[in-house]
Image (cartoon, rainbow, N blue to C red):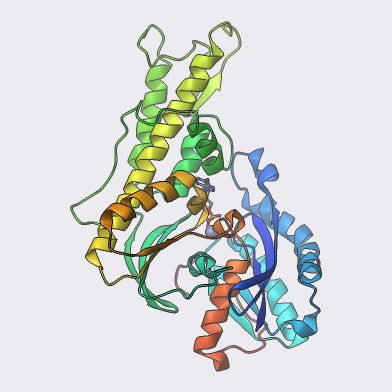
Length: 372
Ligand code: KG4
Ligand code: ZN
């Protein structure tokens, strides 16, 4: 069964065709990163206008790459929410029209459920339930127990900032641009992750919830201290650096100071921050794995699953745990961040559960709610 899916929940205009929930025939993503880098984050109105421009070309490219015509497509899947409503509506309206005109069943998919199914893409071996899923994105962060297809039990979630959001905010503080995750993980490679002692919020004993806002504030404090004039400690950075609007900035003059000092400071702080996030995420996953020893697989999903250090630390901890669980993360970096292939996979398994529920439809309305 071939499903064509559309995803426009935030700042990626995406369409994909996936066969039987796994085989990716085309996965087209028009990213708006360059556009939003100028403003340091997504401006909803700007994102929506870009979706309008990109939607049809992305769909045409998707069909062409997969070598499909509309007659080859068995059903459509669409991200209904949560996300930016002005972005979601471009995707839902497009899907509504195609479904109605071409007479294809339309399957609405919850965005986070989509991320969860990114681990089914391009996988050849059978995935065995129960599965423990750690979803880590810009807008959400959950630990989920999955006993079967589309059976989700939320074990823990973020109480404030999601992990990706923390990466984005800290990158902003350090003046590294948008999106923060890739920028931080890149410079962290050159840094010493043990230089700054940053807090790890494990919350109450046994809690599977997350909290990253304190960590972000701790990073800001380190930066503030490092720019206080007159402090000659090792953590001082050049006098040309100031904190303006909660962000590290360079002022004219005094540029003779050693640029290397600043680069090393940023790399060490980025690495220390990354270690703090990774340690909490990986350890919470292990607490859950110990609590549910019947679990067969651990899955990592969402934009932050692209982080190589996070994958590495989970793998190391899992080996120590030696409970024989399989660890998976999406097979391609393009399946980690927002994409439509994951929506097609989630849609396929929803359809398998109740095919009669999905018919040609022209009335899917976007939602900001986590419930669908
Ligand atoms: O899943 P996603 O594309 O969008 C949401 O549904 O929120 O996740 C985007 C998030 C951003 O916060 C971005 O900074 C983060 O994923 N991200 C990363 C990396 N690549 C993307 N975070 C850490 N390390 C990365 N390599
Ligand atoms: Zn997402």
